[in-house]
Length: 179
Image 1 (tube, rainbow, N blue to C red):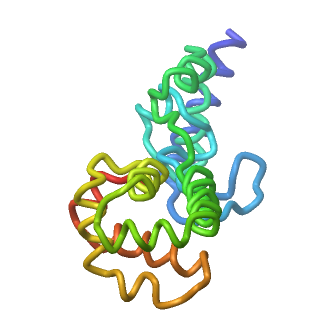
Image 2 (image 1 turned 180 degrees about the vertical axis):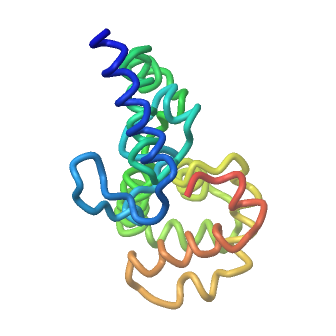
């Protein structure tokens, strides 16, 4: 009888919380800034609960998602396999890629400028690999078309930013590169 009473109380609290809208006050009542969360799940984390209940901002939805994740114990599998909304954060990958770009450009600026002027070469293939592009010849052609803009400055940071801007502004490269 006690178990039934606990289940009924928990269900009514969850339903009430699901009905609430607005700012997520979190599980312990502290306000949560949703703009800092970029994942496809809420505070409950990734797993089956995030797939079933989505990115809900309500306390009850997060409780249900967390409970589902806990009951089925699928978070570890999701993190290992990259499923159930458990995907790596792209911001860390992007920051590492930017750093690698800057270091590569600084070390190979003269060769890179020569290869971009020709639209092919080892440095363009390397830049293509750093950016995760699948088509280095198309990348070389686009970089060659913007040669004057890319190499308008001597700073490696500006050169690499101009190259990434070129990739991001081209529809095909934006889809085939991992920026």
